[in-house]
Length: 289
Ligand code: SAM
Image (tube, rainbow, N blue to C red; front, side, top):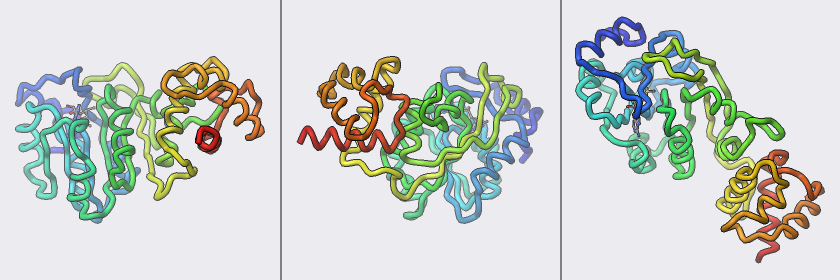
């Protein structure tokens, strides 16, 4: 089968099937063999690996994955792409295509079955409109994962990697860094896609931790605190948490906890590390108990 990473081959497949890309599904197909090679190398795919690809499109990256991996399962929402995938992936016996919305799938159950108990690698050029729900869904549902190597909007990749005190630091940085070590492995300009997206892109690799890097009594509570802290970014942390509906934490209690941690009462949420959020959440649980 022709290498779909070469632009003219992608154009030929699209024309043959009279397929026009759909914005609502975030369809920007990769047409750059160097970028495809980089993604496969960054994900370190070997014959031992079971790979989950989210959104195979016309099967471009799927072909590259199938050449290296033991097994590839590709989940595609757009029914019009299924007959195209049957054709472009016909040569690969190690590929299974599932016609499904990834957000509606019990990925944990499937991943356990595909991987035979071994953690899977997720590799994708993600549909940008649902990047956060896809990634957080994989982490929060405790899918057995080795790594996630994905193309995302450059700005989102920066947020995943950001540390305290920077403009990109926020709830997404903390959530991702609780589950995995993020690394930007490539910056990718719009001309590597058909059609070209309006924004710059980056490939980010998230290497899953065997155990979280911080200890929390109540993980859900810590994330509720984090969300509330960044909802009102410009306020002090004590004010943001004290005002947040649903948290039921008094401003004074937050200030006491901050004092016990050796932090200023007027500190802002963007200054705290993940370890400090874990400690704050533990102290507030203690006080509430
Ligand atoms: N992997 C292909 C490539 O790199 O050329 C296509 C990537 S394109 C950015 C995103 C793909 O995700 C599209 O094929 C789109 O139809 C698919 N997609 C969008 N929403 C989805 C969902 N909820 N579940 C599964 N696939 C989805």
